[in-house]
Figure 1 (cartoon, rainbow, N blue to C red):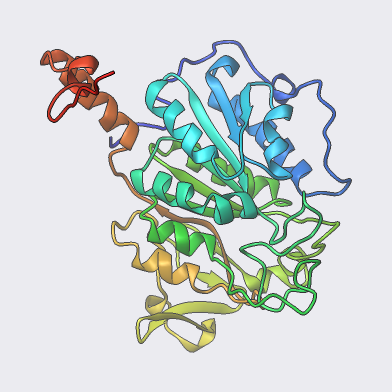
Figure 2: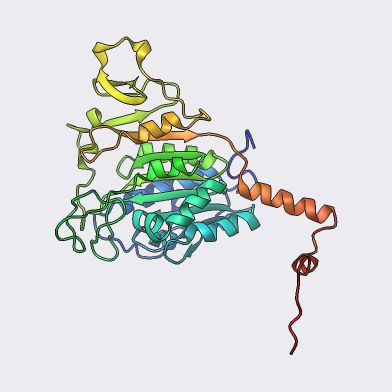
Length: 344
């Protein structure tokens, strides 16, 4: 599949499109100040770049605040059931290669009830793009702790503090052998769109974690990554082929771990250079483990982007081979082998 993009089989639209073409007449129903607004505007502004026909573009969501997304996109869409968006998107991607399929989900929808669907979609390398909005809280149901909430988080459902160790979505995706994994921030439109471009170009399953602020139930959760006085020292901007650095710190290998050291204390040749295309996910996983509750070092960008055959491409090839060999008789298949007739 080398050299192919995610949307090679999707018809293109010769007409010039704008962000307005991807807006709908639906009232956007998120709380004023919600980070979802910024993500929606970024996606609507980005979609015309793909040059795809709107009728061949589909957004599928589960349940949650982020899952209202399909209502606001001027394309086809499906607001599905809790946690099952990857399962529905899998069927669509396999049977309709002429469609560009996007999945929009949240940290609760994707990592709680939908966790099993998510990891297997990534493992199979289904050809769609997953946008995982992570605000570290259940917003739609009014502020309970979520699978990404930090230990000790006081919420309506954990009045004495959460006891659960949170999921690390990036580590989870890499552990599931995802071929494209990235992270970005709702308020950084330029970075968000650049990551989306890379995700859209990737053939196979792309997961983009988007840190998203819930100003009602978990306000300022990522403020240290947005404040000009603190962000540069904390955000590790990942660029393929470039040394991994942030502020005055650089990263070196020590005892199999990435460790930050002052830049002026090491020779530049000792700094680890980011390789997003390495078939071995060890570096990408080590980067994901830099996360900690204090957000001292938070990698942003593409962790991993490697090529592997997508499940839907392979499934369609098998079907074509079966049909060409005369073995594509579904009725014969269902009645083959051990069968029984039950008398009346």
